[in-house]
Image (cartoon, rainbow, N blue to C red; front, side):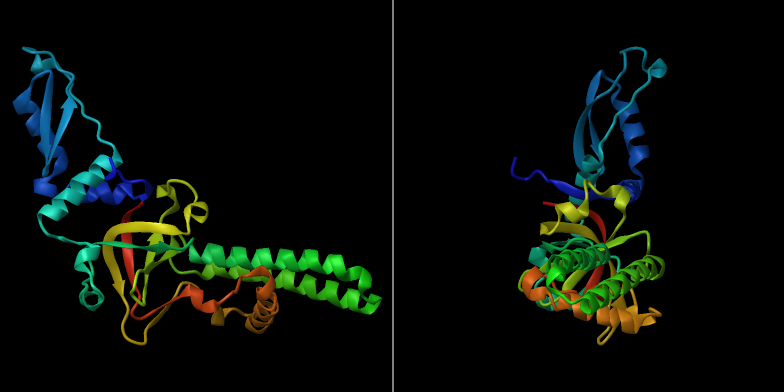
Length: 285
């Protein structure tokens, strides 16, 4: 059973849409096959995948009976996956050496393996708040050794930082591209690029911030290919009205990186050539 998949993400809307187009229509084929077989139990050939299923039907009364077969989303995924393999329409990691990555086309089905990071925007904000909290606790610990003037200055600075963080968080949530999706980055092994995936939270199998980072397999279609020198920003912080104050904030928080082990880098919110985007159908291990 080593070939079983542990799904972290599965877009059922895409699955049903794609499978419905296989061999002239998935639902139509199930209905016709059921009508022809008509026994108490039967094997149904759905697309390219033989599926065994029980049919609630009585012999000699087929016209009066009600027949139903329930397929789960993972079963739909297997139908689509095996169909694409049969049609040789799926590019797998074995078909994607570094040279051929530049020959991908928008709309192609691909399967890639890599190390996925938590959602970039949400994780970026989380790091800022965690380091600020660390700074806040640290300042309170050393406040007893400070003069009253420096205490006031420290409290005032921290208060300003808190206001900037709140304002920056609101700006990011309002101005981010594709606000309904959470973007993750997947680092490919031995390839100097990142694959970006925009995920819809309703199709998560758990919290992505908890499930990742981890080694994963991503299955989906090529959505966007960047051109040389092109930069695609999930959030454009240069448009932030308090950009100077935000830069000061990040500089101060990054000054603690030797202690916290965390660095806040604006480039984490940017995709650069030769990065590309996949519209994921499934992410699994």
